Image 1 (cartoon, rainbow, N blue to C red):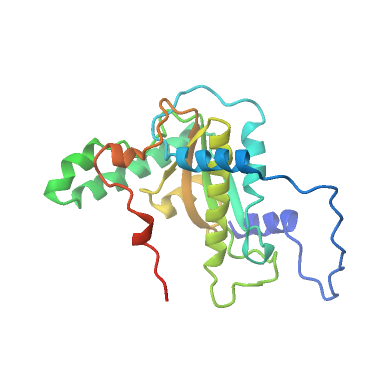
Image 2 (cartoon, rainbow, N blue to C red):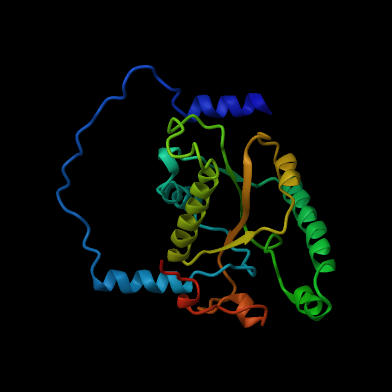
Length: 241
């Protein structure tokens, strides 16, 4: 798969140059958007109503919607402007089935590791939407990208992965603004997903996203409604030094 990765870089990433990059003066903007109180109120609503969706309608999304949402995801910040995200649209039924089987095996193991007082509740949780979600996306980080010339990641190479996570969150919010739900499946073996999708082995698997219109909408996290866990007060996670 190394050749595939090299081809991807050749198509999408600038090779390092020996000459100094051209310096450009910032373009003058005619106007800056007015993020007023009404906008901020809507933004707060968007953040509160973002959910990790597990129950989807099977209705297809409008043509071009996923491409537009992925374009917005690519506006996310990235270390050194490396843009290391790689999105794999999983459309082939056989590949989807392989990933579904991957989840089932991992979920069964996770269930076996639950304490006796939590096992029954865990077994009742719906932890994936693969059977219903019309769109499914495997998200990867390309740590081998030369884009960004390594800026900002010498001491923390994992910032490449963090950059991709910000793209996932940006995608999540953009989708929610369109009334579209996203569910992040993490009970899954990364190596198995990479094999099933035949992508470069050096890519780092970040997550598997199920995308579609939600069956129900709620401003309370699903796991909180199910009695698994609840949100805690913000002051519990803030330290001052």
